Length: 169
Image 1: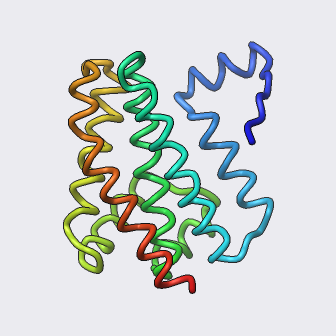
Image 2 (image 1 turned 90 degrees about the horizontal axis):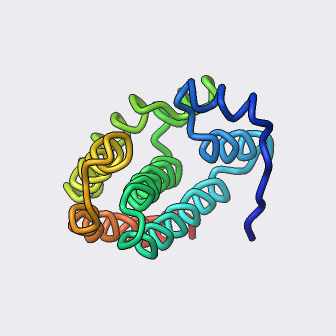
């Protein structure tokens, strides 16, 4: 299910000025408000990861800029899901206290997850970050440049699903 929300122009321009990702902000806000148990929250992040991967794949040819950001979001959500499912308390406690995930939290989670799961976590994060900066913010990548990085991100999501199945059963 998708919900479309119209935001007044004055708020939209302020959001753009601050460089906020409104979709991410709304999703994080709703997750906090729902006060979900960790297993449900991890599954939700995994569902978002799969959705963003699918959306990114679908639009890579016609809109590589938006595809790059969708693929970045897929990776980010997979990392959140893994961090929660594997109960990496030093990250989840900090995120809970500050009320949101930061890039620093994600980066630290990636380093911990790399040790537990393998180098694919770091490889996918590096590809996703490249897509986020050069593909989305700088708009320097064409469809081929974005497409080249999908496999690593897809592998992370596949591994994440298996890890969640092991830890949440």
